[in-house]
Length: 274
Image 1 (cartoon, rainbow, N blue to C red):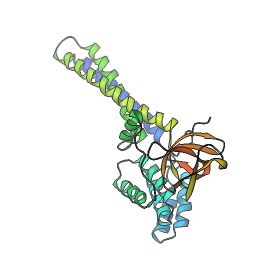
Image 2 (image 1 turned 135 degrees about the vertical axis):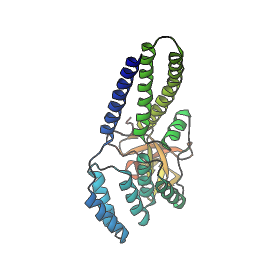
Image 3 (image 1 turned 60 degrees about the vertical axis):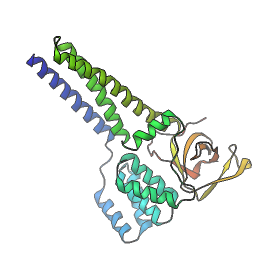
């Protein structure tokens, strides 16, 4: 019996460490250039916002995606009155560090100063679940949680088969049943975020003002406009136009592609093409 327990513990540790290392490898970006970051921070503190902005953007273009860089870039945008890009970069920082109080506070401040900037309301159970988990966990944390629970489920199944009928086996059985529920919940939560980010990625209007069109083309312009900082969902693109859903979940229309940017700033994520 003791030998079985030791074997299961060793297997479990190897499984967990392997999972952790795999996700750590996937989540690691380029090493941050601390000297350049320090220079940009100094420029920001001395009021040279444009110069600081260029360095932050250069660091990001080199693959140094970090919540602090997005946060600092958002601060330079805010100081220069560019509320659209300030909200965009605060949102990008929040994607990487959703529990950071400073990021939340500055995002709320920027939203309060934009004409019609507001967070996207939930329009269905999948969107609601994605919003709930993204408020507390980064995508990598969500993936780690989901896979950890599935590994725990596998470990408990193996343990259950090793032990003879008795109290310990009964405890493992109930633990396995609970883990199934947790694994399904964690899997649905992670899947909902991937689905939303791949099919309806969030975006922010970065142009000072943009007129909504009923179809892709300037000749279809309507009287309704969105202002810098408005957060939207991007549904599809056609040429140089993008179809969006507005912050109330009901408004839909077309705007030029260069007037909006996606929040999830990763190379593999693109707005669906039709």
